Length: 349
Image 1: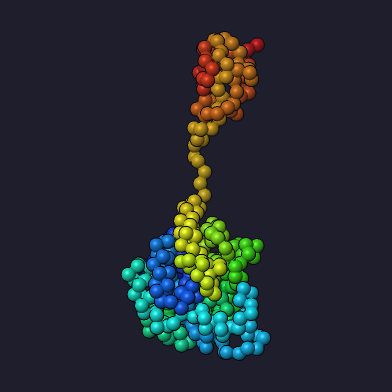
Image 2: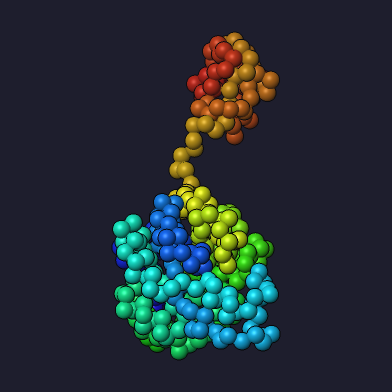
C-alpha cells in the first residue's frame, strides 16, 4: 500500500485503531477580533477537540475585486461578491504566531489550509505540523504539488470534486512520495442537508485510496458527524464558534461548544461500540428455560400446562420441551422450579 494506515500529527496518532481525531474549524468565526480567535482555541480545547484549523488566505490570493456576475457568491452568501466575502472572512496572517503560542499553551494542535503559493511559504516559515487542502483547491495540481512537497501530513477534502479529480490530486501525491494522507468526505453546501451527505462514500474512498478517511461536516447538529464513525471515519472536521449569535460568514452552520463536546463524546462512544465481530461462546444464563409453573407431585405427568418455556434461564433448554412432556415427575416440584433432567421419570403410557 502506498499510504500509511496510521498518520501522526505532532504527538497524535490517527487511524482505525485510535480515537477519532476531532478538528474544530475556525474559518471566519474569528470575526476580525484576535481575542475572539484566542477564545475559540481555548473553547475548542475545553470541548475536547484535538486540533484547531485556521485558513490562510487574503481576498487577493483567492480572487480579484470584480463585480461581474461570475464573481457573485452562491448559496447562503448570495448577493455578496466573492472579493468582499473573502475580505471580511479572512484572518490576518500576522495573528498566526500568537495563535500558535496559545494553542501550544492549551495543548491543542493548530494547523492551516493554504490557498496559494505565498501562504504555503508563510506557513512553512512557521513550521506548521500538517496541511489541509480545501476541496475547491484540489483541482489546482501545481498548488497541490507545492503543498505536498512540504512533506507534512496532508488532510484533503473532496467537496464537489469528481472521483477523477480526486484521483488526479492523489496521483500527484504518489509522485511526490506522500505517505501521510487523510481524505475527508465533504458536501459543499452550507448548511448541508442530510440527504446529500452520502456517508457510504467514505467506505468507497477508503477502499480505493487505502488511507484513513473522515468527514468534513457542514450539517446542522451533531448526529451525522457522530454517525460517520460507524462507517469508518477516523477524522471529523466541524466549523466551530463560541457564540452563534456572533454574526460571521460561517456562524449559521457552525457548532457551539456544547455541540462540539457532544460530537467529541458521541464519536468516542460509537468508536468503542464498533468493537469486533463477536458471538457468545456459551449461552447467557438470562435466556429462557423450562420451568415448572404449577406444583407437581411425584409421579404426576408433565404437560404444557404445568411446564412452560419462560424466563429466566438456568433450567433445561427450551428446545427439549418435546422430550419432557408426557414424562412422570421423579420428585415433588414446586411452582417456579427450574426443571433439570434428574427431576424426570419414565414416559407415561
